[in-house]
Length: 560
Image 1 (cartoon, rainbow, N blue to C red):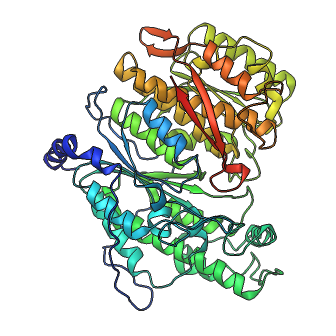
Image 2 (image 1 turned 45 degrees about the vertical axis):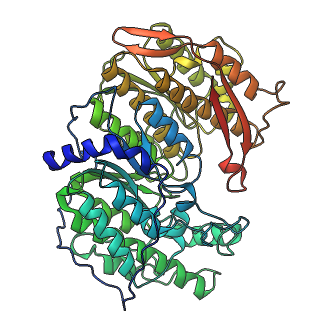
Image 3 (image 1 turned 180 degrees about the horizontal axis):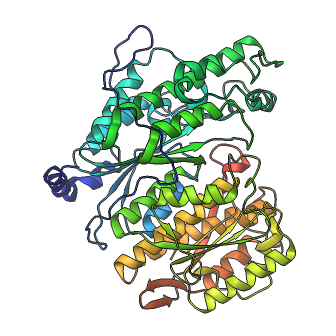
């Protein structure tokens, strides 16, 4: 980033940035073109490099009480990409600038379309918003799936071969990287398409996932090219055509969507060069075995080089990039990891592409933090793994109690897959001060959970280290972030997605019980010296389902 250019934009941002949060810009017309363009940028293919090293960033000198605003283009409007990210930004003391929600909203088949009649994000309006934001802001976190495909669902569905407009968007993002701090996040297309969109239901989902899970011929060296990857989509590792009950039209669309997504990613990574500060590519809905994704993963890993990281991830990517921005602005930190149960060196779950430990390590690379082997130093991360027993749970819980008693900043990550194994102890059988935890998640896949919990803990720790003592505004954001995690990840999951705002006081880990425990517990407000305080009352209301599915349940959280 050019320092003088950055300074000028910072001055303008003081006057104008608040206006961007609600700005809506007119759609720009696009010119038609024939065929699949190769784009106009110069090739800068990097040599193969381990993603374990990642892209390290130096902390900038900023006033932690007046940090710069961050412009954010979400993956879509689901709570994990919108609500949780907004709460996280507030907890780390930054202003998050976002477009109007209908510009990045996805509408499934059973939902009302957007005001412009579409069911995906408005890419023309988002492009205009991004260009306007560039006039006053220096820090960007951008979902490529949203900008190029109208969201995660769109990235699995669109199959156009004329990529003229996509390359226009890509070139704008590449130019943005030259004079700003820009973090991009993207996904490797999942094994299946989306149910309840475009007429697809669960039957198509499972058949496509089964088709995608068949091992393809592994490519390496000079054979690992975009062209060869695409040519191998239809054939198994032995060169035989993969059989499936799906009609040929469905396969053609599936392959075309994969091709489109891979070609666009290739273009951006080749042409962004070293101007790209960081990219996090998540492997969406994957499998530990060799699949149709494997060659794509290996190709993108090579192309990313030391500019980013690739791991099993998707819904947590926005939170992770925001937490990385916290370490960039406030300074990095160390974490100490402790695993409980037998699952450290096993596949974290059926959607992972490596071991639990390797996925955690890659999330740490994304957050730009280092692991320390010294227990008690830095941010403590306690991890309950898959296959854990009651004894494993008891050991973790004892250490958790000890950490909080000794005022050690701690994150709790539950990837055991057993919703009630640990949550009952936390909320029903102890006087554990849950407010003192800096991060918690047991949500959905192991990759999702580790990204959510680690992002919460790292962002808050970095902020508290820089600011000294937290502000009331950041405390409110932290309480919202943790309350959402406790209610969504504990009560909601323990009761099969059934959440009521009232009338559940008698149920195990009820919303009422969780809120009582939060409101009775202090929160950490400083680290050096350590400090904690009581806080305003937290309440929840307006439980709702923005995608008409229990999976995307959200609710309002007030701190008053």
